[in-house]
Image (cartoon, rainbow, N blue to C red; front, side):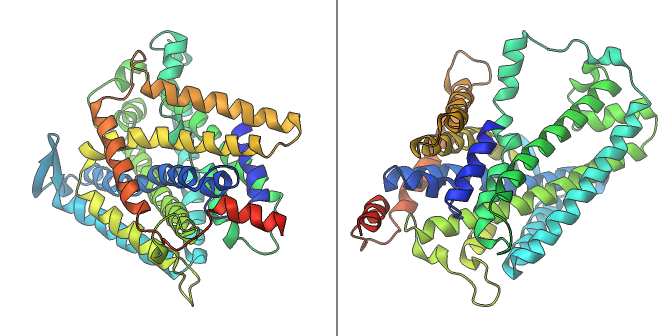
Length: 403
């Protein structure tokens, strides 16, 4: 919540689609601004191909006939043609929808969000009649501190999204009060927390942990089926998951394309990405780039995407840290600045639990390689920017103040 508060203040002061890259640019060199934006872009973008692949897995669970025509294997996991076609079709449709305009994308987000929440409430209420309080125990699988740290490692990836409110600040209704950005961000965080409380609580209440600690593909759905002795609950849960992934896919496509566009506009990468469609008023070049990159990443399969997603959790925490550091540098009153200090401490722990070898769940060689490859790609993208700028952004800002 304090980190969300920091973002709410930053959006009011700097309503820029570049988000973290714009906040950092006020106080740090251009290279730091690019690195921050590039890290945040990884967290947003990688969710798109992951959701596309998840759509195939969930559909294959509901309709086993889709688990056919194996194309190849990656890391021992099969890649099926129907799964691939479904993911590519979803990518094309969402790319086209975002190309048409932010209004169409917003309508889809509203529809999928309310549908998803309704379905979640239904299966949570259904499970409330078929469970036991004794299933909540033990509260932790390891020691409390270690268990919290293990969950903490994935929190940035699970909860990230509240900061994307700032990425759409420039496309907000002109009558939208800037103070409401803070409300939107905090409500997003609270809604996310409530969702996790409800789902984790419902699953824990319905089934003992042993039934969830299995090698089955979707143990949660199976646990509900066993508790209710009905298959319809499985269809409901998997349908909820499909709606949720469409919503997450669309939201991350919006956030990643806007971030790419805004970074290009700031001359942090290739200027072509800042092209805006004259009629639709959307950053079409950035949207198409994200769509093509998503389609390409789908062919990697989940075996290769999961290690990169582990990196994405850390890059989100790095971006949050940069935002908190930027707000601290703005020198607000101490009571407000304490939120930035808290954010810096929390995000530091989020990063340390992944990079310190002594903590279970830390980065392996696969994650370090994925991070190195992403950094190398960033260096290549950085070279595509214009070379004719005489002043850095910080110098330009100083010149403006002096004038």
